[in-house]
Each structure stands twice: as C-alpha cells, then as structure tokens.
Length: 281
Image (cartoon, rainbow, N blue to C red; front, side, top):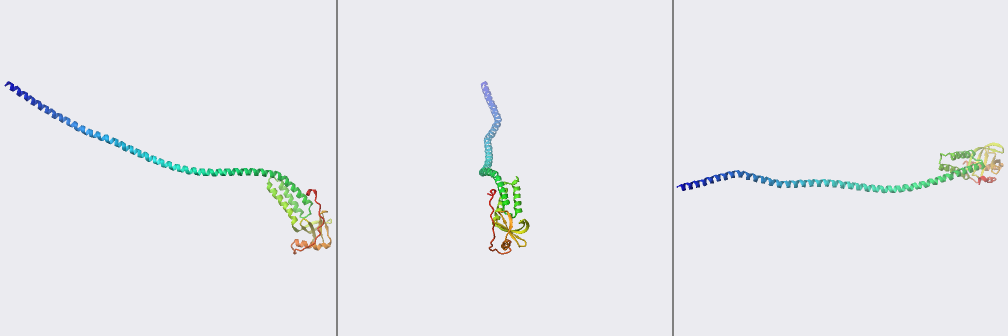
C-alpha cells in the first residue's frame, strides 16, 4: 500500500514536472517568438540596405560620370571652337606676314634705289652747279656781243637767272630748268622774226624807229617817217644808214613781220658777219 502510495506520488510528480516544463516551454515560446519576428524584420531591413546601397552608389557614380562627360563634351566643343578660331587667325596672320615680308622686301629695294638716286643727285648737284655758272657767263657774253635787239629784256632775264642760281633755297632742278628756259629763248631768236619799236643811235643821233629782227642773221631799222632805213653792222657793232633805194624793201619786211601785208620775196642786204670771239667758242 505504501508502495502504491509512493508510486502514485512519483507519477504525480512527473505530471507536475511535465506541466511545469510545458509552461516553461510556452513561456519560452512567448519570449522567443518576438525575438524571431524582430530578427526576421531586422534581416529584411539589412538585406534591403545591402541591395539599395550599391545601387544608389552605382546611380550616383553613373550620374557623376554623365556630368563629367557632359562637362568634358562642353570643354571639348569649346576647345574645338577655340582651335578653329586660332587656326583661322593663324592662317590670317601667316598671310599677313607673307604680305608684310614682300612689302619689306619691296621697301628695302626702294630704299636702296632711293639711296642710289640720292647719291646720284648729290653728284649731279655738285657737278651741275659749276656748269650752270659757266653757262650763265657764256649767255652774258653772247648777249653783250650780239646784235642789240631786245637788249633790256635779255639783260633783265639774265639778271633774274643769276639771282636764282645764287639762291641756296632753290633746288638744283629748278635752277637747271630756268637755265634751259633762258637757253631756249636765246636759241628761238634764231628761228623767228619780229618788229618792235625802240630808241637807237644812228650815226651819233638817237632815233625812235621800228626795228626788224630777221632771226639772228640781220637787224634793220625803219624810221617812223619811213624816209630812212638802215642796218646794224655786227662787224663794227653799230647802226648805219642804208641807201634810200633800200627803204621800200625794208618797209615791206617790217609790214610783213607786223602782219600788215601778205608774205612775198624781198631782197635785203645782210651785211658783214662778226668774227667769233674766244669767250664764245
């Protein structure tokens, strides 16, 4: 009996122990369940972050690369435009430099030509000044020894020429031109005829007469009353009266030179020719 009672007590103890164990298990489950659920949620969040982080990083990297590429493209276009501009500018500068080089060469040649011309001009000036002075002296001797036609006009011309030759402000070219003008005028006297009125000394008497110049060959005069006429004797360097038979011929040439009558052939006494002097050679 005692054995049964002990056995029953033992079995009851096992049952109580089982109940206690079950209660503990249930309580444990109640404690464990929230932990598992939280762990699952945490695992889900962790996995989401592990996936999104690389993706976001990749997106950021791609955006950064795109921005860098766009920036580089903009810089490349800008550099390309700058290159094209500089290339065009370089071509223009090369063309301008080529033209300037040619112009420099032309200017150098022009400068050399001007230097040679200057030297030649200086040489001509040095040589021409004495020549012009010599020609002026010869002209004065010619006028002094020549027949006395237009004496005042010719002497005044030589006086003005002498002043020009002595003026240092006047260029040598202008002096040369004036000398050539004087020589031309004197030369033209040999190819022309003219009549002018002038006072002359005939046989020691001063007479107002019409003077007829036949080139440089002869010089005649006709008195205003047309009663007398004469010729300039270049050999004796004086006027003398001709025979009255010569008056009609001289009167005719005076009228023809004055264009008062038509041209005709007239016989005139030429007279003697003056010998050439040493200073005229």
